[in-house]
Length: 110
Length: 123
View: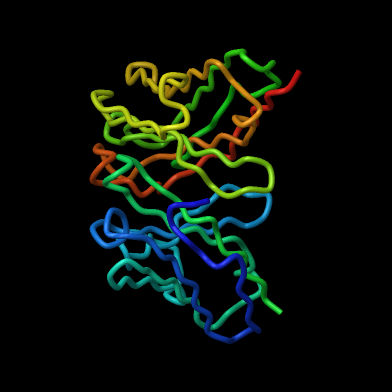
């Protein structure tokens, strides 16, 4: 059972906008920054969003992050087949003294 | 090119030990905290351990405290993870990742990842 809760799956068709959520608590998401990672099957994870809504260089602006209270969201607009991957949220947890990941959301592009 | 490369994985018997290494390139190693993240077969990501840029701060997930030790040698540009008392639950791909800054607590997002090294604990 992950400390951060993500829906196991999401789907969309090319060109659509999809969102996925990450639910936590006041010891993690509410007080600390949320990061998002993308993992294509068989590959290493890749930093997608950091500090709630910042994009590393090279990440398209189709990807955006937001946070409100104890929940965070990742939105992908203009969905493409290459976006099919697992997406993980992560945050520092003050109670545990380390980083916690969500269980991941598997995105399928129909 | 900025990258990190893990090594040291393999088959280990239950109760055994293994040391993983991570070799960075393309950046000033001492300026970055480093971390290990693992992924059990078919499962999600689990943060395991981290160390600050100067080695003065170390962090562990509860499940490995007392069994795993993270360390670094900035003169040799190498990160280590010493794993003892291994069990089947430690079977996973272990990723080395660079943290965006010197302090893990302040900069905990991981911006450069290696391809991982596989540790299998089995008799």
